[in-house]
Image (cartoon, rainbow, N blue to C red; front, side, top):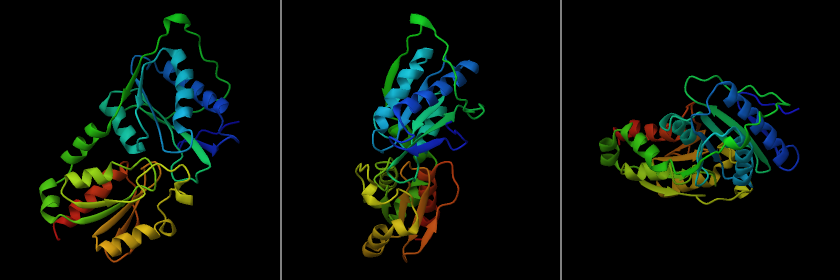
Length: 274
């Protein structure tokens, strides 16, 4: 029996995480949407940078399409906090996300982000998806949430203070979905930014995409070598972070619903004293 908790479901690819089990979880989500009469709202479908993530997402979407719901499918892998923000921004029923956070590369997972005011998904096995006949025709729209998200994030920052300080920052998305987000946000704010590990690698360079200190030795070396004020590492799904300061000291990131904006807020706070 699959276990779908508050943090979603994850398993080893081709062992328990199979296309058949993805369809089973998608059926449970479909039942959730039907029970709560949410089919009039679009459902966001996103995925991370792991092996076959987009294919698993497409498989889930085919099952969910039997409800007749419309979809907003991301045009590339997208950080989890951005997808959560997009649910509210687009007035969506929720977001179905293929993602396994900072787990090793052989894992994949599924998270369901409910819309505002909804209760979290309670997974039930053996659900039968009600047939809706040929009247159920889903619509698909591909979308890129990055620009709208970055404008939202910029509006939450004191851009003038950051731009005046022009701090040096190194960003490490750990080959994950955060690439092209935090670095661009900080560049627009006036920071001098270098991004490392900024391409998709389904093996994550041989390390788990988890921003633990042992996994950030290259980031630490870059911060010290560049005489940067900060180095920021994002987990594979961009949902958690860690900080390397200008002296090379490691600090795990605090709990935050938006790790990307939390990193930028640290820069904003420090900019006033640089």
